[in-house]
Amino acid sequence: MNLQPAMSLAELYSLTNRTFASLTFTDEPEGLFQPLDYCIKNGGKRIRPVLTLLSAHVFGAPVEKAINPAIGLELFHNFTLIHDDIMDNAPIRRGQPTVFTKWNTNTAILSGDALFAIAGEYMTRVDDIHLRPVLETFYKTVIDVCKGQQYDMDFEKQPLVSIEDYLEMIRLKTAVLPAACLKVGGIVASASEKNLQLIYEYGEHIGIAFQIRDDLLDVYGDTAKFGKMSGGDILAGKKTWLYLTALSLADKKQRQQLTEAYNGIISNNDERIAIVKRIFDELNIEHLARKKAEAYYQAAMLKVNEIDAPADRKNLLIEIAGQLLSREV
Ligand code: IPE
Ligand code: IPE
Ligand code: MG
Ligand code: MG
Ligand code: MG
Image (cartoon, rainbow, N blue to C red; front, side, top):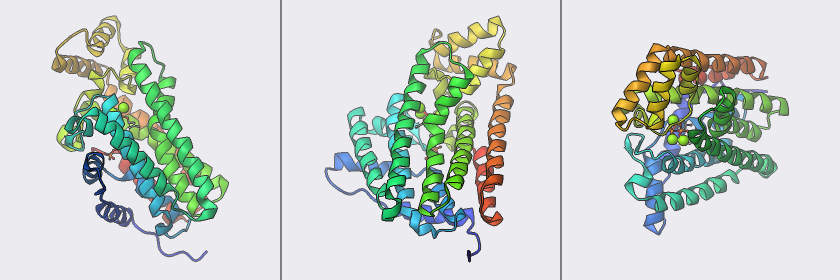
């Protein structure tokens, strides 16, 4: 293989951002498409399309080959967010009002549905020989994400959730999508089955670390930077790794205070968040969650070692995993 020098992550981000800057939703009726234009223009980190392009690059294909499915996967991600914000009753995302808050729930449902279909259409824009595996990967991922989202909501109502069940829930709701992005990039680059499996597993590990980091930022992040309401998971009663670990370490009094604050028995929201944070601090939860995310990062690194690709390109997988682990946004 006669490979060009490796691209940088900055180049991959810049290509992705240029692609999305030129993507507009101007079709009619406006009520259906304006929310989509709003959602896509509000940006986000664009991690998923970058992972798709990156994987194609790791396995030696021109990144242009992966651009349409990369767009499709990012649009699918944005669709999940539009619906997720209804389910989580979240007022802000990316520092702006969420679609269902700015318009209404019905609009968010229908615009989201349209976005899902548009995403699927982009997924078909690959070479014929790759069409079936790309679509199979995409639709399996869609179903997995729905499963994860349902578990996430079921767990809100369930007093006892094991850490194991939580980890499977976040694998489904969050980790399978970056994993699928990497796999799709690999498919369009005609990577071997073994490499596809390895890069998928790398993606699952970084995805789980990513969601634990997200749970952390939900409590400790700077709203102005993170762009989401601080303490939202606490008020929604989300069974996060932080909460479940705190419960397992709490003494009797802490456990009672924690469950009362979490279940809304205390009515003042600021007070609920403050109590939970105090108990998290007493139990050193922030540190433990960082360690847990790091362990998944390390597991991802083991997968990188096994992937058969040039070292300078595999380095990009190491670099992006590091960035995601320490993200503040
Ligand atoms: C948010 O994902 C949903 C989670 C899986 C935590 P991102 O943090 O990647 O969202 P954007 O696209 O950058 O806003
Ligand atoms: C994200 O979970 C999972 C999906 C959107 C599929 P969260 O509910 O934690 O994501 P944020 O925090 O709202 O972005
Ligand atoms: Mg959610
Ligand atoms: Mg949410
Ligand atoms: Mg979150």
